[in-house]
Image (cartoon, rainbow over all chains, first blue to last red; front, side, top):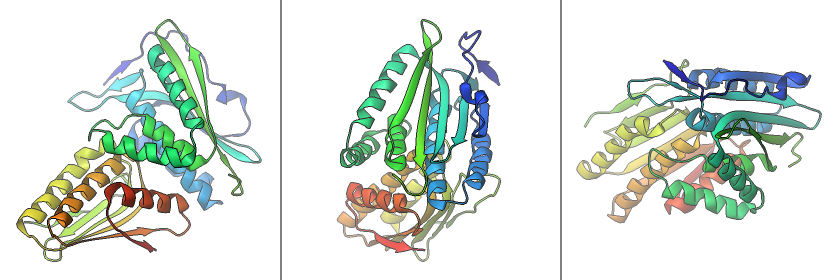
Length: 188
Length: 127
């Protein structure tokens, strides 16, 4: 196993440490077994509302698998196994909402593409988004589905806008932070 | 042809349980499905359904009881539906029964999207 860190010597620290509404946080390689364990914990923490529980878990899997597949910091597993992206995920809860956030390193050019995609998704009505999701699924190859369908799913399932931030680390790389909020009490 | 039976393992809940019986032509996919590289997991099943359609030429019944699947799995499901659609167009008999949790409106929406996308008619059943 080999870590590819892409020369970020002093990465910008996450703000999740500065909150008292934190349910959990994880930073490291997004191995499927780790995501499963955290997902199980997330289900337990949100078990009092099964509707929110299902929505949160669905979007949690989509966003964390995007990090696992596309982060520019990753673990090289070797033997023709796919690399495992490194990143951060945390969930916060306040009186009215749950906030699910992922953060990972991306190339500058991809940061621009991702922010454009979020803007388009936020400004598209739901009927068109469902059409877009079907189109992306149908036109993709078996092995490459792309990150965009996960973003569309996050918007459709949460029924709230995608909140993103780009933190430039150096000329080549930025951190892409994405937060999806879930309204409690069926307030979508 | 031989039956397919993959049982769910609690240590790897991201793999679903799969059962396909040659004698009845009934295939069931249940549990959760959010593994990485889903196509690697589903490819043997996809090939198996193709072979069944070509060699057995009997009715195929697909029962889906997935409580969650990721977008990568959804692409594989679509591939299966495309095979079934072609089989149906060649006068093969098919039946798709999709079971869902009544407290999961997102899943109902997803199933409706698949019906439109695959141009197949599903029996959508609450469980």
